Image 1 (spheres, rainbow, N blue to C red):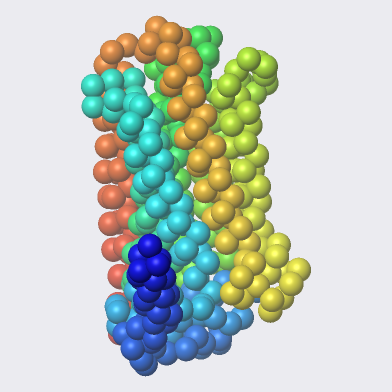
Image 2 (image 1 turned 45 degrees about the vertical axis):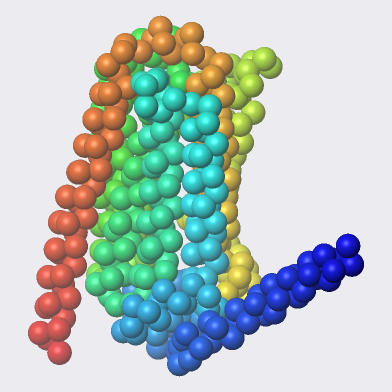
Length: 352
């Protein structure tokens, strides 16, 4: 017995020794990683309002930017918040797959679209914040992809709300226009965000915010109108309504932090690494997403009699088709805007 105890203690000691070696291994893997720089040492389009330090130098190796995941800079928290959300979403998908037949049950496809679109936006966000600092072209490329992810998530929100959360009256009045309009608004949101980012070259910062916020706001109001009606007609016996209220509250809060850099403005110089409004936006958006997924799952379970009566057997496949159209159009928008960016960059290089 004593021998077994000593062997267990020995294994624990070895494990602790290995854990203590992790920082040393990372240092050996990246012995010459450059430190961060100030805002005056990076181009204007990389600078964030009221964030003066913590920028990574440009034109380093890809290895540097991947390893900067473990470095302290002003994008570290932005990367990790959505990376953790992505991993938790994978766990959530695995849990849902245990109780939902995503293959045979077509009525589950809207829920699957929401989860997949959530994984897409979080993965693209991680990529943008981690790798977007390599060069100007990479900055635009990865953030354009980030906006594609946002548009996919907007469509995913629309499809679950129209499929599961809508009531009979609203479904009857919007049946032929709700999802086509949601598809168009998602694409316009992607276009507005990409154009706003492109305007960094020639327009003030507020122009970018308007281009990003206005189309996204219109899409949100349309996509969430079935939920708004549910909340207005609050029913105490509705198990999902509290989670719908939670997702709306989280989204309104994260929209506030996205639009206005409140913390950096109130605490200049103290939020360069931790405490930026965009970091809070990431956390609140992730909370919104998980509330939304759980609310949609509860609607999928408890409102089945209603939505199977409202939606024909081919509706789910049609909405999957709209999802593919949204993705294709957003990809074309990204390619078009990236071409414009390359033209500007080529003009700048020739003028030097």
